[in-house]
Amino acid sequence: MKEHFFQCPYCWEQISMLLDPSVTATYVEDCEICCNPIEVSATFQSGELVAFSAESIEQ
Image 1 (cartoon, one colour):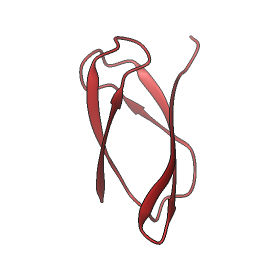
Image 2 (tube, rainbow, N blue to C red):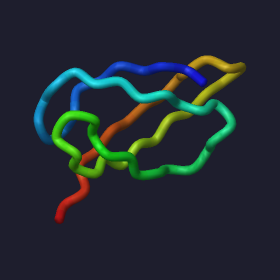
Image 3 (cartoon, rainbow, N blue to C red):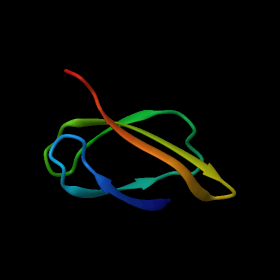
């Protein structure tokens, strides 16, 4: 598991998530501060994070 810090697309607070390098799919996880759902996508290469996106889900 790799901890990654980023800005929430809803509340703009700095948050972190634990990312699993073995997960290749896009998934949804709630912001730990404002509880809104964030679509998370992470790409790892040789165990290192090479691409990351955290997008709001229009509701």
